Image (cartoon, rainbow, N blue to C red; front, side, top):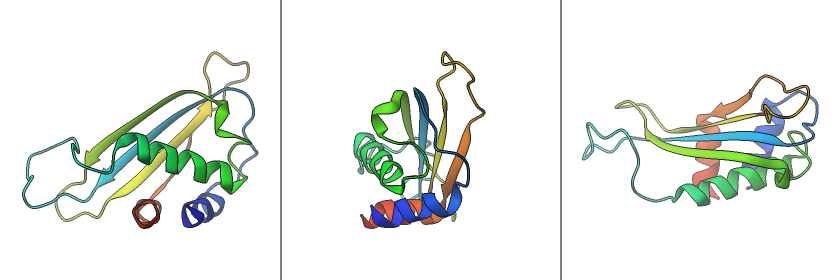
Length: 120
């Protein structure tokens, strides 16, 4: 989790997000040769484990939000990468649209984030 938190600190340079948040985590896994046409990943790691690890690491980073209890609307998706492309994770965060002064989504992603998640 420390590696993921460090990656988030390196990627995100904005202000600490406050108030209710909407979060999307897209985990793109390296495609095995045995699944040339599959779109969705229906094997481990479980989506809820990815969610918890990434959300806790973002909280630990201390730069994205104060606490993951701010997440009031969250979704995770597991997809396969195109053939020959290594996996990665994309993390999108924004103030919840129903909250006053909602901001644009803040992307934090990369292959290093996926590798760090898999190593944790």
